[in-house]
Amino acid sequence: MSNQPEAPQSPAQPQSPPQLPTVPEQAPPLYPVPGPGPTGGLVGSTVWAVPGDVLASPERRPRGWVRTAVRWSVAAGVFLFVAAVTAICVSAPARTDLPGLKTPSDHRYSFPPLKLPPLPPGAVGPNEQKTAGGDQTHAADLRRLLLAGPVGAKPVPGYPGATGWYSPKAYAAKFNDDTELLAEFADDGLRHIAATAWTGPDGTRTEIYLLAYRSDDTASAVFTNDGSNSGPMVAAFAHIVDDLDFPGVDSSSVTAEEQPTTGSFSAADVAFVDCGEVEAVIVMTNPHRVNPVTFTQVVTLQNEMLQG
Image (cartoon, rainbow, N blue to C red; front, top):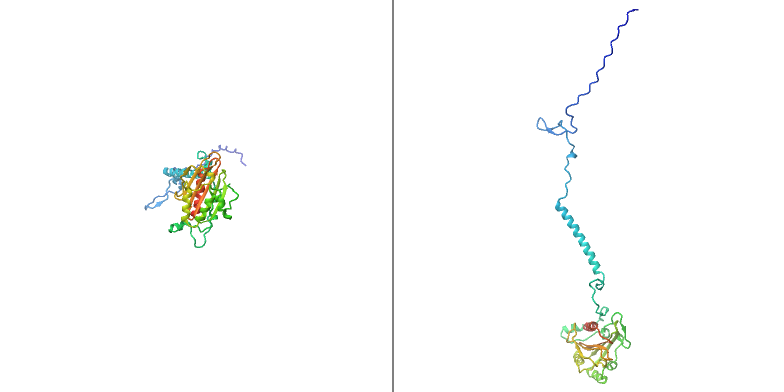
């Protein structure tokens, strides 16, 4: 064994730090970008590329004229809707219930729809006969040609209406000289009288008489005589002073008279209507005044029933 001392060890040399990889000057592309190759083709490139979804074109905003057209279309739709609703609201209620459109009532009657009776087989109405150049006669039951009373009217007792004929003697008794009138009925060939009477909602009493003769010539002669001042008049109308210009009906077939309220005499309007072999006598009376509108209504509608 050697006794030589061990040689002193040299101090440990410091270790150098590990070498880090060198960062390339240009990072590899995440997406290959086409570029010209050696032969003119497209090959990968080493430059950075932007994703395709980023390069997508942004959504275009609507053009100005499109927005304007849409706005006007919506405005027009709203205007039409409001106009339709307004029209419904205005037309639904009665005209007299609308503010600013209410007009004073003329108190005319409300009549049910006119309904003519059926004609016998092969028969035609008086208008068709007149058009063909013949005499006007009524083939239908005359009692069913009487004008029905308006809504709210009350029938007057003693008038048979459609259920029977009215007595010529009872009719003649309404005139000043009933004996003379009955004699005229016999000479003129009166066949029968249909009659009805009712009191309207306004208190006016209406009497309608349809006198049927043997021919239209006889009825026309009676009509002319009754409409003149020399003809027999109803006793209650002894103070008739005015002839009425009757509107709405052929003036050659209607004669109207008027009596204003005088003393104990009631106001009265009387009309004579000539239609074929029938003369209609319509009498309307009221303690105060006969409404000319309702008088025109009654005479016009009764004439339409007779014209058929």
